[in-house]
Length: 332
Image: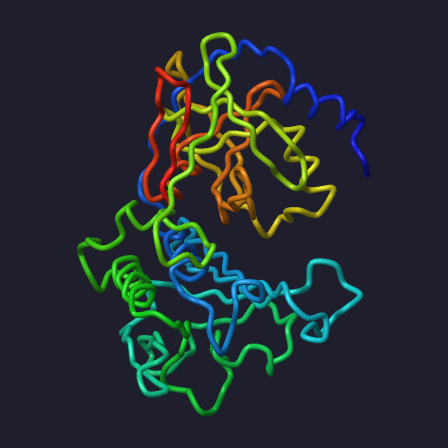
């Protein structure tokens, strides 16, 4: 059902109006290991023989009861789907109680070109792995996820097949930590969250973008889902914060789906109040032709507040705001 909003008018208002926003600082959340697993799988891991970023997306969530939920979403060919007529059925979902994991190990395969992460359950088999939904045919899962019902891997479970040691090492350490098999989490630092622009560039480049001073705050022009928008550049905010009207537009135009949502998070606003906000992974924000992928986004309570925070800025190798010249310089 379409909601009763004039999207064009409101989104144009975000672009052109002289907005006098009251900025608020977002409290830096604790390290979210689920997001780090997603980042390792979807960003650190490279395209290769068995999968590409345009085919598979991983969303993980660790519940309060320490159950790891892995949803592998297929965004590629329709012939991979078991239920073509069922909307939102393009995924495979697994649930694994972390307290039931006895051992986690990385093994190199295919002459060292692939890294497999194996789990062994405390019953000596793989019975702690439960496949809760199967919407993709088995042949399209080869090399990406394991089959918990396979007779060939009945004593251990190959949960992830990855292309890089960096991604495999990070995920291995997180799973060790979350399952209680390790007491530290040294590698899972926020330095892993975002400092890549997926353009396949081998050398670094610099770009300078003009900032527009409006009411004492800087605005930056960006593109989201082919919409030319203006947002406040707020380096003190931990995340990109979008208005609810833009969230509804993205949902109704199928730019995002419910599968893209992360657990809600608590943030502290300027008056000290703690508020809960919805969060999701926005596929792309484009700045001057540079596509920035997989950006964590929060949804605010006002249709007049649109902030570009560090979940966008920290995707670049470096960034600098020049107050004298009113410019943003990025290195990518």
